[in-house]
Image (tube, rainbow, N blue to C red):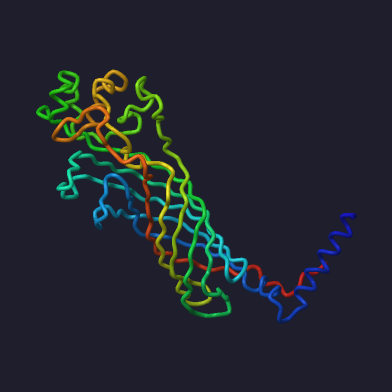
Length: 303
């Protein structure tokens, strides 16, 4: 079929859609909308350095931008970019359960999400106000970089075991140290070569829901919560087992050995340090405030 004929048929089809006064096809044009706005709230993580109990100190402020496009009343596509922080510490919890690692981490978090929202109530732009529940899922690309503060303690078990190499770290007391380059679980050492160094930019699957409160034809307030299910167990730099500090000393230096085993008792090689069977998760609670544009409400296309 010639291109001219295809264009003519397409034009007739669109004119026919606009000509049907009560058909759902015409609603496609009337209900599409575009929103831009802000999102702010809190981010948190769940992994080896948290417990099932609620810990408010793990919730950190987050802020970002969001845009939504609603082509039909039931479906909304969204893009968001958010900055937050993640943190976890063993010493936030009572270690009566035997976990006495004294491990901790903190990390900046950059989250870029593309998702589809399913509106459980029709988003009709002709409604001046209303409450609209929704659920969403999609794909997120996130960037993290776990760090921890080095606390110099010449009386600690690891200091006694390492000797003079540890004592040479005295001038780095209180330094915020990046953990991934240290290979704290023996990543890519000769004996643990199967443990690969984890990437700092990864993919997660967001799943969540929320409520949109339409204030008027232009402004919408929303609240939502979404979990990001990751494919890594190293948001906190803790996953598998302890490695002999001598191995870490020879491969990565004294700081690696010192940050790998920070507990009051030195652990033996292959003692459990984390739970490699389950990946880490992070969540974002957000409040959105968006301005709505209506640009797709043509009467009928002309050709």
